[in-house]
Image (tube, one colour):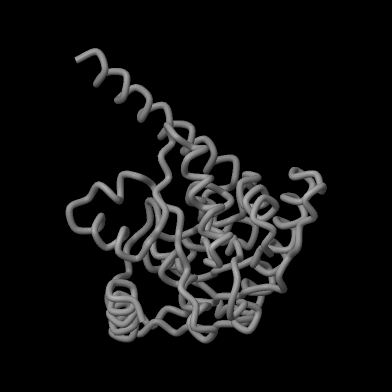
Length: 254
Protein backbone atom coordinates (compact mmCIF):
# COMPACT_ATOMS: atom_id res chain seq x y z
CA UNK A 1 0.00 0.00 0.00
CA UNK A 2 1.29 3.44 -0.93
CA UNK A 3 0.07 6.58 0.88
CA UNK A 4 -0.73 8.50 -2.32
CA UNK A 5 -1.17 5.98 -5.12
CA UNK A 6 -3.50 3.58 -3.28
CA UNK A 7 -6.10 6.24 -2.33
CA UNK A 8 -5.94 7.67 -5.86
CA UNK A 9 -6.74 4.23 -7.33
CA UNK A 10 -9.62 3.80 -4.90
CA UNK A 11 -11.02 7.21 -5.81
CA UNK A 12 -10.63 6.54 -9.53
CA UNK A 13 -12.52 3.25 -9.27
CA UNK A 14 -15.36 5.00 -7.44
CA UNK A 15 -15.50 7.62 -10.21
CA UNK A 16 -15.46 4.92 -12.91
CA UNK A 17 -18.32 3.12 -11.16
CA UNK A 18 -20.29 6.38 -10.94
CA UNK A 19 -19.75 6.87 -14.68
CA UNK A 20 -21.01 3.37 -15.32
CA UNK A 21 -17.92 2.45 -17.32
CA UNK A 22 -17.87 -1.22 -18.25
CA UNK A 23 -14.34 -2.60 -18.31
CA UNK A 24 -13.33 -5.77 -20.10
CA UNK A 25 -9.74 -6.61 -19.22
CA UNK A 26 -7.95 -9.44 -21.00
CA UNK A 27 -4.42 -10.68 -20.41
CA UNK A 28 -4.07 -9.26 -16.89
CA UNK A 29 -2.11 -12.40 -16.01
CA UNK A 30 0.57 -11.24 -18.46
CA UNK A 31 1.52 -8.51 -15.99
CA UNK A 32 4.45 -9.90 -13.97
CA UNK A 33 4.02 -10.03 -10.21
CA UNK A 34 7.58 -8.88 -9.71
CA UNK A 35 10.37 -7.29 -11.70
CA UNK A 36 10.51 -4.48 -14.18
CA UNK A 37 8.55 -4.20 -17.42
CA UNK A 38 7.72 -1.54 -19.99
CA UNK A 39 3.96 -1.21 -20.47
CA UNK A 40 3.55 0.15 -24.02
CA UNK A 41 0.08 1.65 -24.49
CA UNK A 42 -1.81 3.11 -27.44
CA UNK A 43 -3.19 6.60 -26.89
CA UNK A 44 -6.67 7.76 -27.94
CA UNK A 45 -8.07 9.40 -24.80
CA UNK A 46 -7.04 11.65 -21.93
CA UNK A 47 -7.68 8.96 -19.31
CA UNK A 48 -5.70 6.16 -20.97
CA UNK A 49 -3.11 6.10 -18.20
CA UNK A 50 -5.75 5.56 -15.52
CA UNK A 51 -7.43 2.77 -17.47
CA UNK A 52 -4.18 0.98 -18.35
CA UNK A 53 -3.18 0.90 -14.70
CA UNK A 54 -6.27 -1.17 -13.91
CA UNK A 55 -4.78 -4.10 -15.81
CA UNK A 56 -1.97 -4.35 -13.25
CA UNK A 57 -4.15 -4.44 -10.13
CA UNK A 58 -4.72 -8.22 -10.12
CA UNK A 59 -0.95 -8.72 -10.10
CA UNK A 60 -0.72 -6.25 -7.19
CA UNK A 61 1.44 -3.92 -9.27
CA UNK A 62 1.48 -0.17 -9.73
CA UNK A 63 2.45 1.45 -13.00
CA UNK A 64 4.77 4.47 -13.00
CA UNK A 65 3.83 6.55 -16.04
CA UNK A 66 6.03 8.87 -18.03
CA UNK A 67 4.20 12.19 -18.33
CA UNK A 68 4.85 15.74 -19.50
CA UNK A 69 6.87 17.91 -17.15
CA UNK A 70 4.11 20.56 -17.17
CA UNK A 71 1.76 18.24 -15.26
CA UNK A 72 4.27 18.04 -12.42
CA UNK A 73 4.27 21.84 -12.20
CA UNK A 74 0.51 21.99 -11.60
CA UNK A 75 -0.34 22.98 -8.03
CA UNK A 76 -2.81 20.10 -7.58
CA UNK A 77 -1.68 17.42 -10.03
CA UNK A 78 2.02 17.97 -9.36
CA UNK A 79 2.13 16.69 -5.76
CA UNK A 80 -0.05 13.72 -6.74
CA UNK A 81 2.19 12.80 -9.67
CA UNK A 82 5.30 12.98 -7.52
CA UNK A 83 3.60 11.06 -4.72
CA UNK A 84 2.71 8.27 -7.15
CA UNK A 85 6.35 8.23 -8.35
CA UNK A 86 5.49 8.92 -11.95
CA UNK A 87 8.33 10.07 -14.18
CA UNK A 88 8.46 13.62 -15.60
CA UNK A 89 9.42 13.98 -19.25
CA UNK A 90 11.34 17.16 -19.89
CA UNK A 91 11.69 17.74 -23.63
CA UNK A 92 14.79 19.86 -22.92
CA UNK A 93 16.39 16.98 -21.03
CA UNK A 94 15.17 13.90 -22.85
CA UNK A 95 18.16 11.82 -21.86
CA UNK A 96 17.64 12.60 -18.18
CA UNK A 97 14.01 11.49 -18.36
CA UNK A 98 15.02 8.35 -20.23
CA UNK A 99 17.67 7.51 -17.63
CA UNK A 100 15.18 7.93 -14.77
CA UNK A 101 12.78 5.55 -16.50
CA UNK A 102 15.50 2.95 -17.08
CA UNK A 103 16.56 3.16 -13.44
CA UNK A 104 12.94 2.62 -12.35
CA UNK A 105 12.81 -0.47 -14.56
CA UNK A 106 16.05 -1.78 -13.09
CA UNK A 107 14.58 -1.16 -9.64
CA UNK A 108 11.77 -3.55 -10.53
CA UNK A 109 9.04 -1.06 -11.46
CA UNK A 110 6.55 -1.24 -14.33
CA UNK A 111 6.91 1.92 -16.42
CA UNK A 112 4.01 3.00 -18.62
CA UNK A 113 4.82 4.70 -21.93
CA UNK A 114 2.89 5.81 -25.01
CA UNK A 115 5.03 4.86 -28.04
CA UNK A 116 3.02 7.19 -30.28
CA UNK A 117 4.20 10.11 -28.08
CA UNK A 118 0.95 12.03 -28.65
CA UNK A 119 -2.74 11.22 -28.74
CA UNK A 120 -4.11 9.84 -32.00
CA UNK A 121 -6.94 11.97 -33.41
CA UNK A 122 -7.71 9.30 -36.03
CA UNK A 123 -7.92 6.59 -33.31
CA UNK A 124 -5.54 4.55 -35.44
CA UNK A 125 -2.03 3.70 -34.28
CA UNK A 126 0.42 6.44 -35.21
CA UNK A 127 4.03 5.68 -36.03
CA UNK A 128 5.80 4.41 -32.91
CA UNK A 129 8.89 6.07 -31.45
CA UNK A 130 11.69 3.63 -30.45
CA UNK A 131 11.84 4.78 -26.81
CA UNK A 132 9.93 1.82 -25.37
CA UNK A 133 12.24 -0.64 -27.10
CA UNK A 134 15.36 1.28 -26.05
CA UNK A 135 14.27 1.27 -22.41
CA UNK A 136 13.49 -2.45 -22.49
CA UNK A 137 16.89 -3.19 -24.02
CA UNK A 138 18.88 -1.07 -21.59
CA UNK A 139 17.04 -2.35 -18.51
CA UNK A 140 16.79 -5.94 -19.83
CA UNK A 141 13.06 -6.19 -19.15
CA UNK A 142 10.06 -7.33 -21.25
CA UNK A 143 7.58 -5.09 -23.01
CA UNK A 144 3.87 -5.51 -22.23
CA UNK A 145 1.91 -4.60 -25.39
CA UNK A 146 -1.22 -2.95 -24.03
CA UNK A 147 -4.14 -1.70 -26.10
CA UNK A 148 -7.21 0.23 -25.02
CA UNK A 149 -10.36 0.71 -27.07
CA UNK A 150 -13.34 2.85 -26.08
CA UNK A 151 -11.53 5.44 -23.98
CA UNK A 152 -11.84 7.99 -26.79
CA UNK A 153 -15.59 8.02 -26.14
CA UNK A 154 -15.04 9.41 -22.64
CA UNK A 155 -12.72 12.29 -23.50
CA UNK A 156 -10.44 12.83 -26.48
CA UNK A 157 -9.23 15.67 -28.68
CA UNK A 158 -11.86 17.72 -30.52
CA UNK A 159 -14.71 15.38 -29.62
CA UNK A 160 -17.64 15.63 -27.18
CA UNK A 161 -16.86 14.78 -23.55
CA UNK A 162 -18.85 11.99 -21.93
CA UNK A 163 -17.88 12.35 -18.29
CA UNK A 164 -21.32 11.56 -16.87
CA UNK A 165 -23.00 8.21 -16.45
CA UNK A 166 -22.75 6.91 -20.00
CA UNK A 167 -22.03 3.18 -19.43
CA UNK A 168 -19.28 3.24 -22.03
CA UNK A 169 -17.47 -0.07 -22.60
CA UNK A 170 -13.68 0.15 -22.20
CA UNK A 171 -11.68 -2.79 -23.55
CA UNK A 172 -8.14 -3.31 -22.22
CA UNK A 173 -5.82 -6.05 -23.48
CA UNK A 174 -2.33 -6.89 -22.25
CA UNK A 175 -0.60 -9.16 -24.74
CA UNK A 176 2.10 -11.72 -24.17
CA UNK A 177 5.34 -10.09 -22.93
CA UNK A 178 7.77 -9.26 -25.72
CA UNK A 179 11.48 -9.77 -25.18
CA UNK A 180 13.88 -7.63 -27.19
CA UNK A 181 17.43 -8.87 -27.53
CA UNK A 182 20.03 -6.20 -26.68
CA UNK A 183 21.53 -6.62 -30.14
CA UNK A 184 18.21 -6.45 -32.02
CA UNK A 185 17.73 -3.51 -34.35
CA UNK A 186 15.55 -0.98 -32.50
CA UNK A 187 13.64 0.11 -35.56
CA UNK A 188 12.79 -3.47 -36.46
CA UNK A 189 11.83 -4.29 -32.87
CA UNK A 190 9.59 -1.21 -32.77
CA UNK A 191 7.87 -2.31 -35.98
CA UNK A 192 7.37 -5.75 -34.41
CA UNK A 193 5.84 -4.18 -31.28
CA UNK A 194 3.48 -2.03 -33.35
CA UNK A 195 2.35 -5.02 -35.41
CA UNK A 196 1.45 -6.92 -32.24
CA UNK A 197 -0.49 -3.97 -30.87
CA UNK A 198 -2.25 -3.40 -34.20
CA UNK A 199 -3.49 -6.99 -34.18
CA UNK A 200 -4.69 -6.64 -30.58
CA UNK A 201 -6.48 -3.39 -31.36
CA UNK A 202 -8.23 -4.82 -34.39
CA UNK A 203 -9.44 -7.78 -32.33
CA UNK A 204 -10.85 -5.38 -29.73
CA UNK A 205 -12.55 -3.28 -32.40
CA UNK A 206 -14.14 -6.38 -33.93
CA UNK A 207 -15.56 -7.45 -30.55
CA UNK A 208 -16.68 -3.96 -29.46
CA UNK A 209 -20.39 -3.04 -29.50
CA UNK A 210 -21.28 -1.20 -32.73
CA UNK A 211 -21.05 2.59 -32.74
CA UNK A 212 -23.81 4.45 -34.55
CA UNK A 213 -25.25 7.94 -34.88
CA UNK A 214 -23.36 10.63 -32.98
CA UNK A 215 -20.84 8.06 -31.76
CA UNK A 216 -19.46 7.64 -35.29
CA UNK A 217 -17.08 10.54 -34.55
CA UNK A 218 -15.23 8.11 -32.26
CA UNK A 219 -14.84 5.44 -34.94
CA UNK A 220 -11.89 5.40 -37.39
CA UNK A 221 -12.65 6.29 -40.98
CA UNK A 222 -11.26 2.85 -41.95
CA UNK A 223 -14.19 1.27 -40.11
CA UNK A 224 -16.80 3.58 -41.60
CA UNK A 225 -16.61 6.19 -38.86
CA UNK A 226 -16.34 9.98 -38.98
CA UNK A 227 -12.98 10.35 -37.24
CA UNK A 228 -10.25 12.09 -39.26
CA UNK A 229 -8.19 9.88 -41.52
CA UNK A 230 -4.56 9.42 -40.40
CA UNK A 231 -3.53 11.95 -43.06
CA UNK A 232 -6.08 14.52 -41.87
CA UNK A 233 -5.09 13.89 -38.26
CA UNK A 234 -1.42 14.46 -39.08
CA UNK A 235 -2.26 17.77 -40.75
CA UNK A 236 -4.09 18.86 -37.58
CA UNK A 237 -1.14 17.75 -35.42
CA UNK A 238 1.27 19.69 -37.62
CA UNK A 239 -0.93 22.80 -37.38
CA UNK A 240 -0.97 22.49 -33.58
CA UNK A 241 2.80 22.16 -33.52
CA UNK A 242 3.20 25.27 -35.69
CA UNK A 243 0.95 27.28 -33.37
CA UNK A 244 2.91 26.07 -30.34
CA UNK A 245 6.24 27.04 -31.90
CA UNK A 246 4.90 30.46 -32.95
CA UNK A 247 3.57 31.08 -29.45
CA UNK A 248 6.92 30.08 -27.93
CA UNK A 249 8.84 32.36 -30.28
CA UNK A 250 6.53 35.29 -29.56
CA UNK A 251 7.05 34.72 -25.84
CA UNK A 252 10.83 34.84 -26.27
CA UNK A 253 10.61 38.11 -28.19
CA UNK A 254 8.30 39.78 -25.65
